[in-house]
Image (cartoon, rainbow, N blue to C red):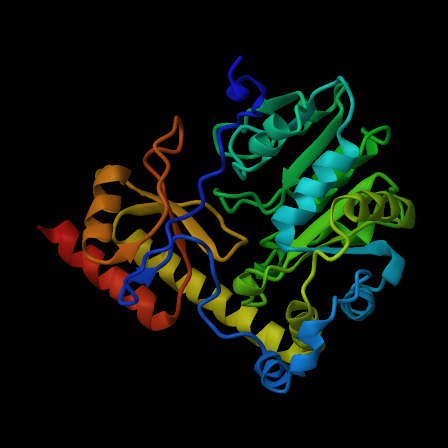
Length: 351
């Protein structure tokens, strides 16, 4: 018998391309175009090398405390992991152990079905409507749990908080995860609902709005019992998931609220200006509450424009999938970068 008969086989998640050429305009992975808060560099420059010799704090107490203060919850309500992907994967492993299928949209973050397959969790994808909005009634049925990215990816569309609450209230016998990776760019967080629903877990990340994708910091906020179960799973998997440098850098980032507001505001302003310039070139874009636009041209194919952009060192994201094959997901870069994109598109479309 071949050893391969006992291999757990899954189709892995495919991340956005990370080009080696530093001259590209990289708008394909929703990274923030601005540096982290100044205090992040300061603490890293002053970092005591002796700290690297020792294990980091397994409880990540310092980071959990500043996050708890910022979101007006108790530290015991905060769970920290290596990016929100780690937090979400741990939540899938911890909370989705029913024979009933978990539910999430058919067009959403494409890691959800990968985790479900990896952990042998049954799932059903619920179709978005013709305008790419969630149909709340699809979640008013028996299930083993619910995951909703809000604002959604790759569409950028936000479901109103009232709809999110209806879904949570109708499913209090299972855990409802609201993935808020992009909420800081104009969305409304479900954190305000935590006191009302003990089955709610809100997940966020430092990768987008805090310019720290390279540090890998994600976190979840929920009631103490939910977070306790997550910690039990974490400490059964790896006690030291957060490294010492990420902890101190994360604390410095959260402590600088003014910089956080400044940078997210700049991204939103650039997004809205870029949207208008795209529309002037016959693009249609969905209403985004994220740091990207999901847009298609009225006459040119998405694949054709994607290839043309890439050939000219402008990287965006394209999925050759039903319903979204004509769309491009374009991350919002600096004003200078977006001006170059518009200049190229004008020239390309005129030919």
